[in-house]
Length: 133
Ligand SMILES: [Zn+2]
Image (tube, rainbow, N blue to C red):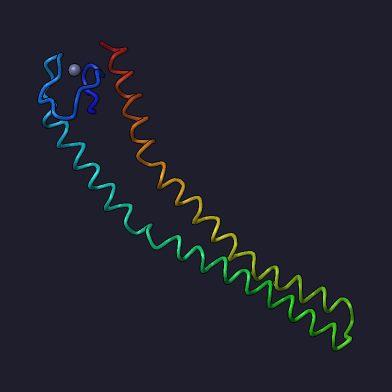
């Protein structure tokens, strides 16, 4: 299905011109070019989920390292506050990793919603054109 940019009527994708007389061929070519451009832009995002998993793993390793360190310190019967300090330090080191992983989540969500946003903008544009006419 293709939506006529002039009257907003939905037409089968194979139709050459709309009932209102609008030539849909150049419009269809423009849509295809935009779709190709979008896929090219989306490509760098493909390795991000792997990077995200690595960042979460690094964060988990930091926390686990802190926990192991704390247990070893407890076994050495050191001061209680030194154990707490080791845990807090491990948590502080882990935070940037988890935060970066969350930033990637936001990036991926925005990237996935981009075609919907483009469609929405086009619909608003069409509605405005129809109001003007
Ligand atoms: Zn039309």
